[in-house]
Image (cartoon, rainbow, N blue to C red; front, top):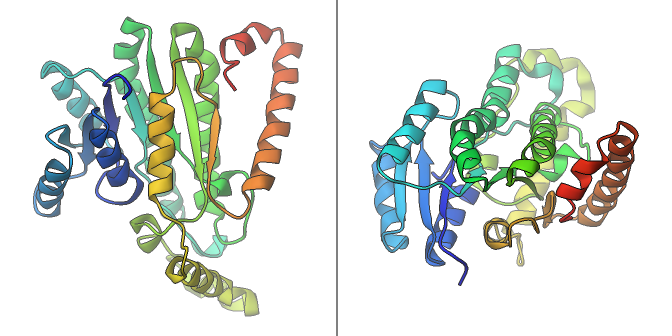
Length: 296
């Protein structure tokens, strides 16, 4: 059993967040599981998590799209004596459809939650981690941030932005004893997919011809995959996050790929990017940072 840690997880109402909270609690860690509200569905979830967490899960109200909400939640935890050793930035929105049909407001909402939400949470906890010279920031991304597919442009763009932010944090924070890591899941049956945004202006897409049917065909393919025997199990992602949190400090990889048919290609792409990234940093006189983040 790994040493007990305090782990703040965003987006725990379902999917990866909920499964990770239960998995960590089952291994003796203290989990601060955030939801957007603690009334109605939030209260029901709190009871469910509490029952499955052996008293090690504290449900916290937090909306990652609000500075005030994030800061208030972290402040309340700290004032209550909580120690936050790791953060899992899991809260997110997804979107699928031909790009032109999405409004600017929809795009802003995606980036507000998927990118700025993680940035808000990181900023709230980093002063605590810097004082102790240790900590871990985990960012749940997607393989689509690296392998480009049609119909996922805005969603993948937001996750690609999250990855850039997370990797930049890695170089900036490693000298302070704080690690930043990225988890890249393949397709899994979670509420994220069920609740994904579609284009708010479908009238713009009528002249795309057969391409306009592509999102529906892709959705049907995913549904068939998820209903088939041997369908992807989202607990694989939770297990990967647990493994990162329990890994020795300084030994956690930058990127962890979980599932997905493109896993091998994604691994090759990441390896090439890592090599070129290292060469670029050395060329800029920043090679000393590579020694600090050499766990990979």
